[in-house]
Length: 176
Image (cartoon, rainbow, N blue to C red; front, top):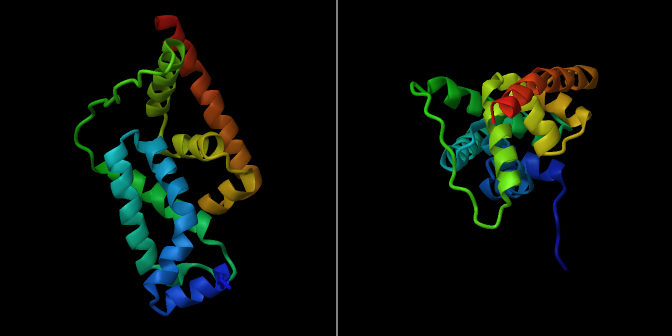
């Protein structure tokens, strides 16, 4: 018979120094963290580095996780902050584009590239809420917990970011 520990038990064990418990606690959220980092940075290697650094940061600061809180929003907040740090530390501004996949239709590729360009023109906070909402499909309540704001503020930030992005997409569409 397999025994699965609850998240609360895993958090307590991780706080006591159990690395295995921390790894087990982090495992379900690691993929979402990578998707968030990739959505913000648009670079696979940087996204992997950011998630690993965020995991180390979370391990060092596991004591800061509030009692009764879930790890996911707290960890994704660390990932988002690490992405911001990486973006700020860049001294160059070269746009990297991955080579297109052979099986992707041309129209989807063009739309995808337009979307990536438009996202890059937004600020970090605007890009963050859009990636959380539409790329990770997070509900407003979870976005709010991740960012430390109210659900109404999360909804407002998403709506503002969408409004800001619309003219960028229209200009790019007219330029094509």
